[in-house]
Image (cartoon, rainbow, N blue to C red; front, side, top):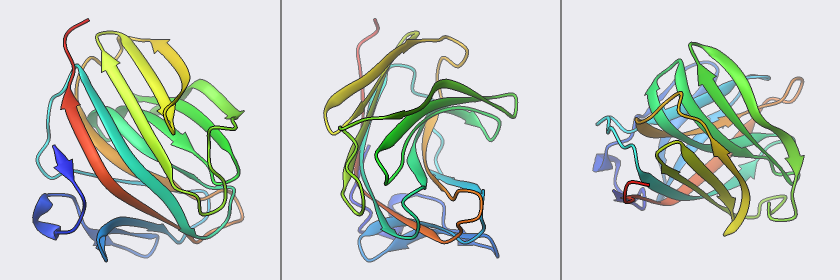
Length: 183
């Protein structure tokens, strides 16, 4: 799967409500979150079931607070079950799992020189092979985890606002997903 988000026909969800907007905009995929302390994500309309794969996407803050969160969802089973690699525009990253509608920190918010700040573009990459998952930002390995709670699923893109700071806009571009050999 490759997507430069140049065509709305490429198959990603689009929509809007009073809290957020998500969809195609001027050759990127845009997620805008207007409400404070809210995480919004979008998926491909065609759900895939990848177990061994790598997903790579460029992402950057277009506007809003630096204390934000944006990233890529992997092994997305449904709204209550997936993994998330997220960064913030103030130089932090974390890895979470949504399992049975409950968030679990696999790696708590951690500062990293690999994360570009401000409006800098970050290249996010997640590799999943069996129970091993590797999480990268800008080609730097952040962490390797072993977890087999979720063995396969689709992908998504997400963004959120912190408490007291609504109005973040994140742009995603040049998505690539490819299969990896079994580990």
